Length: 155
Image 1 (cartoon, rainbow, N blue to C red):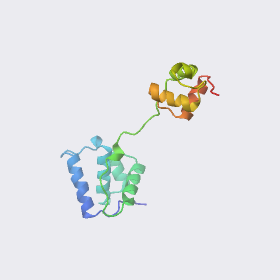
Image 2: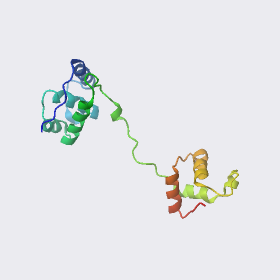
Image 3: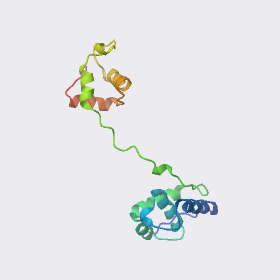
Image 4: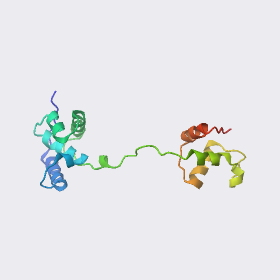
């Protein structure tokens, strides 16, 4: 089944063409296009009835990616399509790796020796202390995993 971008209003098309002209110089090289430029290109040429397979080949993308971009464009309300850089921002990526030895060292230290009024650590108090005094922002569930792997059990 052929998939094409919905009808673009003149204003939407003009915005895309303007953005395309700002982003690209006169030399067109698909290998150097950013993801945003590829989305603009997809919206424009799909409006001229280019098939998904041709767009995918031209931009070195999978057909699935092109279909996804067209579906996202088609979901926007008529006249509201904008060029969005937010999808190209750096994504959160891999979760931080914690220094288990440092966490275990702190957990083995009685809270009273660091000036806290507790006799023993709780997950909540250890989490707060690590965050406030060592700059280690760690969730309780992750802290529990790190402590278990270190052979430390909090009561």
